[in-house]
Image (cartoon, rainbow, N blue to C red; front, top):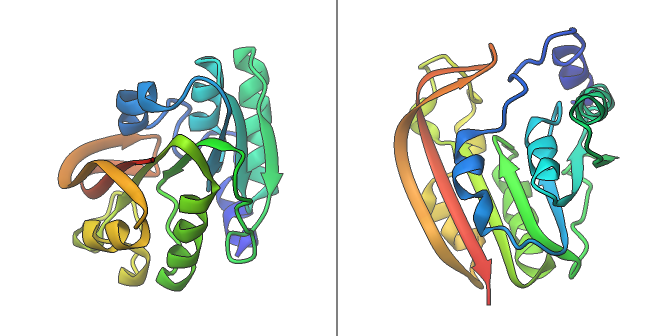
Length: 199
């Protein structure tokens, strides 16, 4: 699977642009200022670099070494530092305890992996830690403009709330909103958003 994403990220341009996701920008103030932030499926680095620019210590995780190399170059061009980790979420275990925040923007994985992964997220957050997610949902399929074609990769709000049992849902919403992120994400999009906090 990493070969697919290496190919997608191999061009000079940034597939999803270099600006951070709108939802992340709108809710970044909810992330604790101290402690480390883990960004899942970070790709070419735009969200991790944005968070680093706010003063966070960010670990950008993705299966594509090509994408993360671009993330490091983007960070250097913005005068910030990020840590990168090449890993496939099918095999990666989120270590419990050290994370003040975990971010998942357009990180679509099969439901069996998602349930295990989000269970690890619940245990990995520090007390007061925040999980922030935006994902396409099944209503996006067939529209074009971004997102996976497999409904198993597009969770509902109910799915996510069940997977995140043990966290307080601060914000949970299924909505449609315009997305304009590079050439990869364009147009009115059916999304699900969650902000959740550990007690």
